[in-house]
Amino acid sequence: MSKQIVGLLTIALLLSGCGATENDTVGAETVADPAQIYRWRMVTTWPKNFPGMGMAPERIADRVRAMSNGRLDITVYGAGEVVPALETFEAVSSGTVQMGHGAAYYWRGSVPSAQFFTAVPFGLSAQEMNGWLMHGGGMALWEELYARYNLVPMVGGNTGVQMAGWFNKEIKGLADLQGVKMRIPGLGGEVFEAAGGTAVNIPGGEIFTSLQTGVIDAAEWVGPFNDLVLGFHQVARYYYYPGWQEPGPNLEMIINQEAFASLPKDLQVMLRTAAEAVNNDVLSEYTARNNRALTELVEVHGVEVRRLPDDVLAKLKQISDERVKKLVGDDPLSLRIYESYTAYRQGVMNYSELSERAFLNVRADLKD
Image 1 (cartoon, helix red, strand yellow):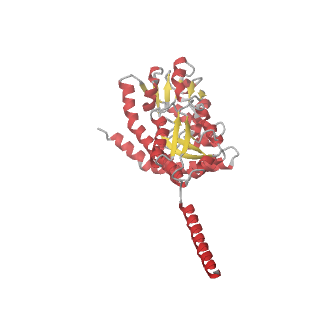
Image 2 (cartoon, rainbow, N blue to C red):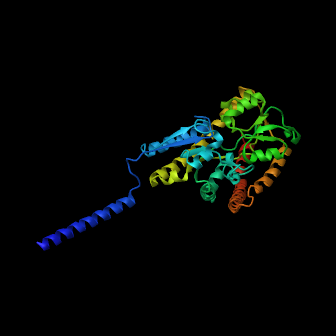
Image 3 (cartoon, rainbow, N blue to C red):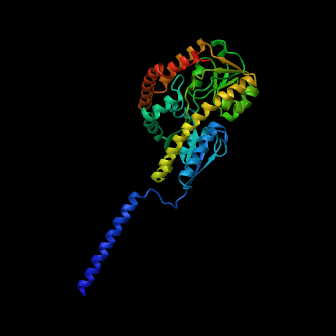
């Protein structure tokens, strides 16, 4: 009898051991509970469903929902629906919402070096920015910086080189910038002020009315595609280029650190994959649509497109170089970001001279 009991106990222990081992293995390999559904909110700095930038968060949400078979369901809110546009950063950092979409230079008041991750005047083009972030060390620095604020950053789109902006007066030289009130955010705004103007940082949805009522005299938004939609040609006469202030502005998707950590690994990867796909999609859309919109602005609406004078651009470049260095302050991480960015920019400029710029110059010279 005792031998039978011992035998049964032995079998039971073996089965128990096998069960424990199997469960441990499954627990280690399982990436998600298929029954768990995560319902998140994403606030943005853009008007709801605004073409281009405003559709980027919607496309990210749609891709994640499809890839996850509905396990991660993200509801997107336009500026002001949950929090004001410029409170997006704080809302995600504090955990009020799980996600946000905007541009890093909107937070320059509290995170000065964040501006490197949107656009620096006379800085990187869109593809150069992608190169720095993905293969030049920029992403690791961005993640380290935002970890201070309980955030995980990801790319969220790029509009490509922008226009210099809409003006209600001609800019014939530096003297014409004096006292001009212009909507121009980020470091570009600081440079504009140092050149004699007054920078105003207001959301895109308020620009038209501000121009119409004279609250501002000029405005920089994006480029022809978005500017046509907002009707700036109705309230400003002159459209200036080149977009010295934002040569390749990177948009961002930010996620609350605790919320991101709560997701299984596969959903984390889906978020990154969707963000990178939409980043490319947004740039492709702007590349295709800007030229068509510019043609309409000129041929249908009679907009006068002007180039900023050389002396204006030279002064803006001089001030920009000085201001970029001041972003570093006494912060060692900001210094590392600055050194990484500037070293990468110099290297990529050297190659661009022999590749894209050389090709574009030849193509322009030999056009039919």
